[in-house]
Length: 191
Length: 175
Image (tube, rainbow over all chains, first blue to last red; front, side, top):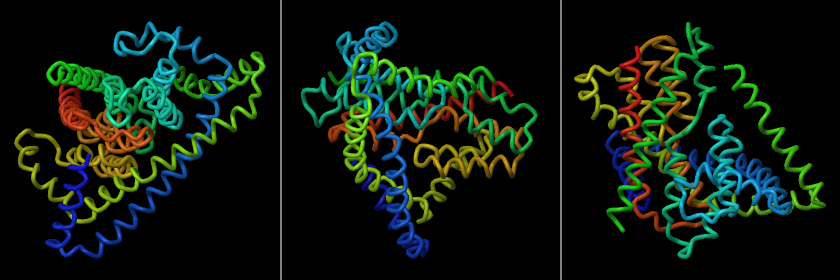
């Protein structure tokens, strides 16, 4: 991330000098700061909401029962998580929220999953294999029906807006398989 | 379609009701418990904020400086040779960087090329099958303060590129 950030900033400044867009660049930096605040405020609401709900699930012991229930589904991928650890539940709930396109629930539950995975981590500043696997699957955007996209296509009068569903699912599965495959290969190489 | 839609609408209310009802049954003080959990949420978001700030500033300046347009020009030749509509490139580059910006680009593509064009189809599949990678990385890694990401970022970026190639390939095959 350090390299990428440095690269983006440097390239941006150089290009804005060449293109004579220094004004726009300055404006965009403050725009970026503003967007970060707006997104954070939005996150604040939904993350607090979902961490409140998951706290109830934790204190009532439901999270461990659900973990035992969900474990068979994700244990093939996440081998190093103990049987009734809360991480199993938060990962499953995040995947479900993603599948059904519930972005407002997926991100907070994903944050919860990362916290649960962190509790299993010995070196708290280094990402574990499980964390990387979780993030890689999330960035592959596993979603059954892309509602927003279909909505836009329909709005502009598409003859068959849901025609994109099948290709999207196929593309998602293939890219997720590729990403997870690459991760497991890297794990073998860099062991 | 409608069934999935219905499940999507039902899943959150039912889940929340179930969580609260189960809590009450187990004699958990659900209100106090919810507030305590929500308080943790506030701490987490404050922790994430600096990471988001860094990402947003970098992405916005990249777009404003003209570097984004230059990257597009760079790939224009390749896309023409492969007979892929050049507009797809905008989506492909913007999607991993910004969710709201990619939605704007996508809407514009649908508006200008028509909702049933090949360009719209490819863009739609990319929109549905790619994720705002940098945002996800900033939020999830920031939330737990991970600094050493090992090979994670490289894998995510390679997967983005491959994912876009897959999306283009599938649409070309289908339509």
